[in-house]
Figure 1 (tube, rainbow, N blue to C red):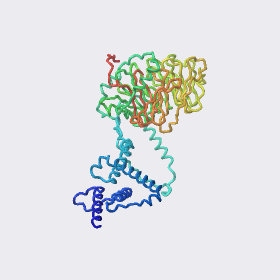
Figure 2: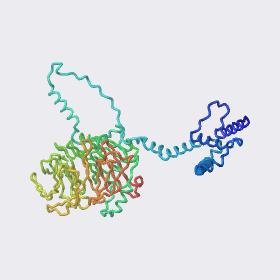
Figure 3: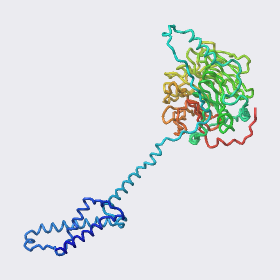
Figure 4: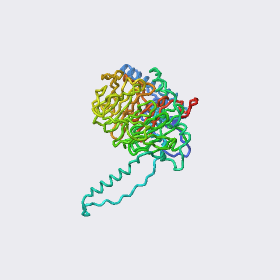
Length: 567
């Protein structure tokens, strides 16, 4: 019996060594426990591996007494044996089994592999990289000035000092501050703010200023080609530049075909010029201050080339680089809101005054007075625009009314409109004739509508061709949205948007949305002021922080190989 017990113990020790991974030398820790399922399996194997001397024999009488029980028992044992053999075969097929790992370790490694596969399928590193805040692009253009905080004296109560309210002193201080803010009448020197006093204007800017633009082609491209052109326009870091300090109220392109030059005016009366890739100023930006209040409208004239700006301070000025002055063209006691050219040589201006008057001004007269003045209505006047072909017609947007007048039949007061553009329920921001034929008028209204009117017949009937729903609620801190025509494609217009993601939209006069400009990296604010280049495929947008965004094709830095005459 002792020999049988020793043989049984020896086989048990061998079985444990096969089931337990070998320990490294110097490790005195306990052996890792096996799982319950593995222990049960080991017990069953121990029962089957009985020593030969311990075999039991069943009598024939018991077999005859319980034949069905014995058959069921044998079937169950065979199924368990087959299942154990299958499990052992599966575990032995793993490469790690050859290294002497137990079934518990193999199961643990399989769980680790499945967990790693699940984590890799979640793509957590990629998601964390996308959620990480991107570095802000470097600001180009005008740099932020470091201003020291002014230490004000401690405020003392007048009641404790036994003093009455000093209303007279307050009024005197307010009036003196307003008088100081006003610009002097007459010409103002053309002194850039961001350049030193002894630095002259760059020669490259003066040569570019005097370039004669190429004659604009009157033919339009088909709508499909135009839409493909819009899809090619893009923006990058080099074409987002701070041109003025405050909110942009107006912007314009220089009509040059070989170079790119833009101007923008802000709410504080500043005017900025920007040429990409220029070395002067701050990243190609030169900064002036010709007005004391918002620059409400601007446009480049030709023969000679000047930049005409009108402001809410009541002055209209002409920027002349050859004379290096901002010459005063006209001054009104009320603020000027809009203007347009009444002649092809840009010598006569039609100015819209905020109080409802329309003034005709000839720039060649030495007296800075109007040739004629007409009262349209008692409502605030927001926009005037001249018919491109029949220049005696002009459209006026006043409060919630839009009317077309004939300059040949105007009187000082009580003028009758030749066409009424009805349907506006709130104030109208702008109204413009189509650029080539003038057969359409595009209006932007605060009732969240952009309307297109038919003005091909000036017989008093101007039906609405299309009304497009567009959100116009910009609030008090943004400039009003204004839809403007593309001067090269008179059936299409562009407008800013307050929707998210930030975007600029181009529509057809039928109301079809042709293209939406979006860019999550560079177009992140509302561009209220938009404009197309007069003869190149370039679009600008101005926002409330003084930045211009330029969408252009890939040929912006390639100059056109044409010899251009100089004025």
